[in-house]
Image (cartoon, rainbow, N blue to C red; front, top):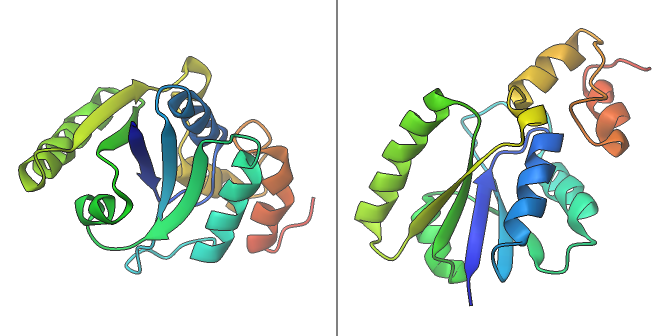
Length: 161
């Protein structure tokens, strides 16, 4: 059985993330969306909110589960018995960074494989950082995030639309 993890902070979940989840779920038997609990980051949404939002978006995909973790990804992968990491690449700069991480993970656990998926063209520019920047100024984020989350994101900035 091919069990993979798609890790990230997902703060907030973007349409690009959703696209990667859907596409990844088609190539593995089980996909775990691993929401990183990074206490060093000042997150817009709490860990519980991020997990809940991803569950809401993936509840119709039977082979997807959503969990949270902290610490090293390769250690968490042992806990959940996964050996594949899914990572999305938007540009060459992503590849350089992701290659270093993939090689380091492989040194830590030689059974870990990383699969790089290029983002769909319509999301190649998109990041959670861009969403937060636009939202903080009341900009239109309707092309960036699932419609169910637009009001929740604006609410974090005390903006009503």
